[in-house]
Length: 169
Image (cartoon, rainbow, N blue to C red):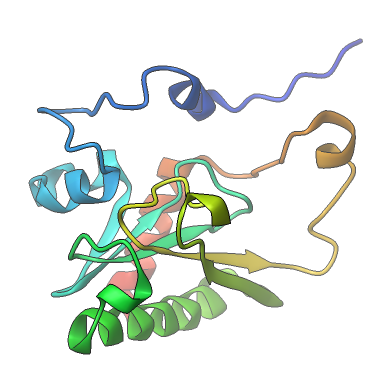
């Protein structure tokens, strides 16, 4: 019997990536989420809004709990950020790690940004950091044999649980 991996949210990735749930796309999914009505935050997976930074779930996560932290202002490079536009996203990363420590109990993190398309940035125009919780042994045979990752929880289920946890902090 052949086993199947079910990841229905990945279908959006191979379909028209410029379509959004409402209105026209700016071409930047971060700016679209920031500009949208907060009532639409769950649809865009925007889980927290600060004055100068936001936190979103990564729609195509590398691992369970993968978050994106971005400045509200649309800038391409780290050198383009100064003052609070630089400081608040870093403070937000620190806060998200504290929340994830309580909430998911990871044993480590990969935190980083890909600046420019040559560095692997899928959205090179709007700088953002990836916060990826890690556990000992969280890599397995799936990526090697099938070029697939196993994510154990749906994005919207995780969104709801994280939102509740953020409300406690």
